[in-house]
Length: 97
Image (tube, rainbow, N blue to C red; front, side, top):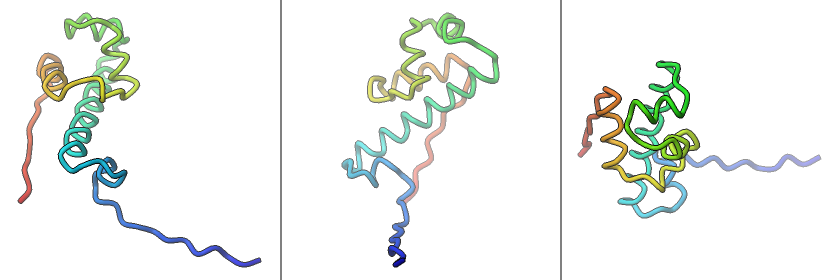
């Protein structure tokens, strides 16, 4: 049996860029995912249900569901930064030249 040749391409570090999104959209989507992940970790660490997290953050539960399901295309970067701040999470941006 002949072995198929496997071609491996090194990723850029941003899956959205690798999927063909324009650079500015890819950067924003990656940041949204990172913030949503931080919020999911916070919920787990605090032992919160979606309803409890929503109450603590002052939002409706469906918004927390969007975060839990990583539907970040429905959430603005500004909104996620605000939720992280409300949760007591430090948000910092590091720029690379």
